[in-house]
Image: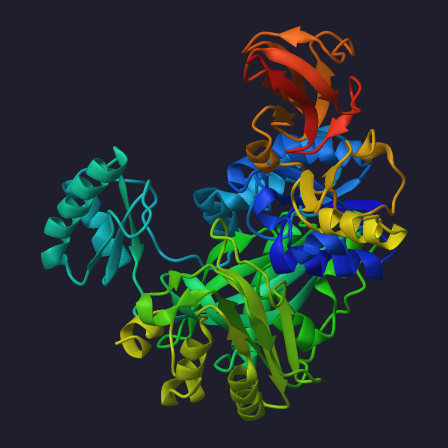
Length: 447
Length: 144
C-alpha cells in the first residue's frame, strides 16, 4: 500500500491524511466545488475536484471515486465515516477495481448492516438481543399473543419506518390494540407498508459501545467501551470513556460478548458493537454493529494510547494489529463534545456561515480535531459538525473541570455553535453524577 | 507604464489564489488580461507530490466575456472526444453537437455544445486523459 485516496471530507479526512503521513503513505484528497477551500484539499499530496456540492454527485459518486483512484494510481481507499463507509456495494466495487477498501469485507458489511440479519447472527451466538417479535404483523389479533410473551412496555415499530413514524409505545395490553392499529395505518400511509414488529421498550437505558478490531492473522481485540448516552433524537452529542456506570463484571461480560461476535464473523479492521444497558436490571442487549471508524474514536485513542486510524491502515495493508490484549482498564477519564454549527436555542438548526475567529485552549488534557480556520466558510450541504473537543482527567471530576475550562475558552466567532449546550449539560447536577440516559436531553435538559 | 517581474508575479499569484480562470485589469492606458492556461495535460499522470490543488475553471468569467462560451468538464473521469482529437481551432459546430464524453467507472456523461459557433481555444486533453470536475475543456465563439 503506497497511496491512499481519502474518500471523505472535513475533520476525518484531515485525521486520515495525518495518519497516512505518519505511516509513510501518500494521499489523494477528493473534494466538491463547495469544499475548494477545505484544509483536506491542501493537506493531501494531491487533490482532485470530483463534482458539485451535492453529496450524491461528489462524495457519494462511486464511479468518480473509482476513476480518480485509478487515474492517480492509488492502491487503497479510506472511507472514514458517513458517505460510503458502510456501503457494501462500494466495498465490492473497490475489490473489482483492485483497490483495497480500508474496512471490513463487503460480505461482513452486508451481514451486519442489515439489522434483522445482524440480530439473528448475534442471537445465535448467545449474545442477548432486545427481546422482540420473530416476524412482522399487520393483523392485531396475530400480534397480541406475541406482545404478551415479550412483555410491557412494548415498542411497536414500522419495518419500513424512520423519523418516529409508525412508532408507538404500549404500556399495557389494554392500550396495545388501538396503538397497534394507529401505527399500522400511519405506516401504511407514510411508507406504503403497514408491517409492524414488536420490541421490548426500555425507559431508562444507556448507550454503551465496545470498540473492536480484527486482522487477517486471527487476532481480535477490544479497546474497552464508550458511553454515548447523551443523545438528541438518536444523534450522539457527548461521549465518554470509560463508562461511569459499568461495574467490572458487567464490563467484562460486555467485552466478551463483543469479542464473541467479531470472532464469529471473522471481522477485520475497526468496528463497534453497540449495546443498550438497562440500569434498572443491569442487563445489556446488542442493538447493532457499525462496520467503520466512529466519530467518537478519539476518546478510545486517548484512553488506550492507540492510534486507531493507523491500526486501520495496518490491517488493510495485511499487517498484524499492534493492539495489546487489554486486561486492565487504563486509568483516566476522557470526554468528547461534538461541536456543531447549530443553534441550540433554535431547536439545533444548522447555521452555516463564515468563521471569523477560532480561539481555544491547548495542552496535554485537551485535543481539538477540526477542519475549520478563521475565514472558513461552512458549506450548508453537509453534516454540521465542525470539530470535536476531547478532554481528559485523572478521574471524572478532573475531566469535568478540564471540560468546563476548555469549553469556556473555545470561542468560535461568526457562527452559533453547540458550545452553550455543552456548558449547560456540564453544569447540570445529573450530568455531574452521570444520572442520565439516552432520552435525558429531551426529558430533562431541554425542558 | 511598465510592469516589473515582481508585478507579473503578484498578478499571477492573485489569479492563482482565486477561483476564476480569467482576469482583466486596466492601469491608465495599459490593459492587462490574464487567462489561466489549461491545466497540466494529465494531472493524473504527474508524479507525486505535486501542487495539491488545481482550481477548476468556472464559468464566472464567461459573464465578463459574453462573447465567448467556455465548456467545462461535467464530471471527473476520462475524456473521449467525439471525433478523436480533431477538435481543432476554428471548427464550426451546431448547438447540441456532442463534443465528447467523460467516462468514469461504469458511467458516461456527454459533453454538448451550448450554442452554434466556432472553437476558439482548446484545453490540452487527449483521448483517455483524466479531467477533474469543472476543468476548462474548450471555448466557443457563438455565432452572432
